[in-house]
Length: 88
Image 1 (cartoon, rainbow, N blue to C red):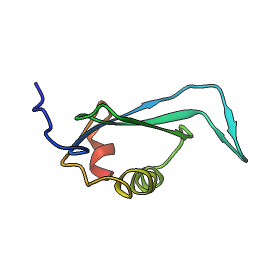
Image 2: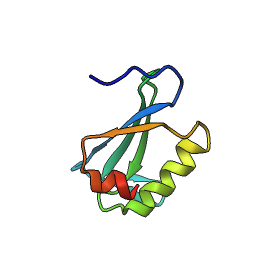
Image 3: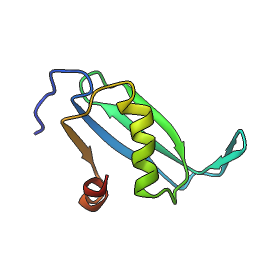
Image 4: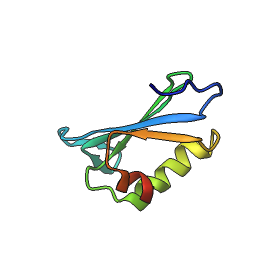
């Protein structure tokens, strides 16, 4: 069992929804969603991405959309490989 966080954005979960039909937003076309959830409040961010996004691009997106507005998380939970989270 995971310890319960006691502060906002202290521990987060990340996940992806892939295999979606292409969706156009402005001039860009997306086919996946990057989900970031604060475990304390259950607040979720849903970010449009492409399934071929690189770890560097994913990190930049995280920095601009999460760290810019919230704190650096103490822990990140993901059901994806540890290679992704270690590069992240």
